Amino acid sequence: MDKTSANTLQSIPIFLAHGQNVKVLEALPANTVDWSMLCPQNMTPESTEFSIPSKTENAKVIAQATWPPLWKESWIKSIPFIGTFLTIAMNASRYATTLEQNAEFIASDLEDWESQWIGKVVGVIDGGSVL
Image (cartoon, rainbow, N blue to C red; front, side):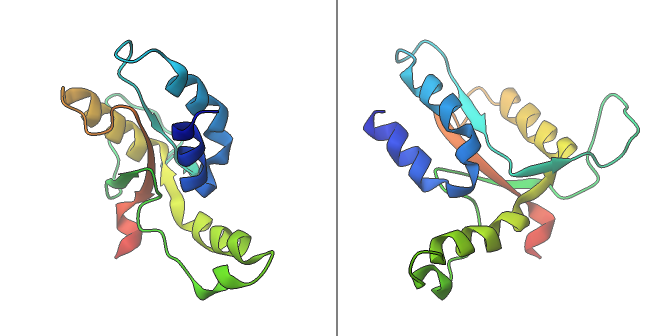
């Protein structure tokens, strides 16, 4: 694993399931593919009904590369052996988004020819959950 992959995997602690895919993407020769990787924690559909075009009724997601957006650190992290795990567990439940929110985020990014997310792992959080 190169240094970039190691840093990416260490900096997004709740998205470890995506690690193998990140390694494959980062191993691609430079300038062959413009990629970004959306790493939502939990996604659920807003409705059982499916219609096109699909539009979310929830707030837009807040996105950030290399570190989960609006991550909350805690003094609990300093507890030996379990502190880091507990901090991750406390944050993980905050990162639930809907399929529709993520679809809108992807679609709006695809419309932008100069995407800010190219070559990055992107974490998201429901924008309505920060109120």
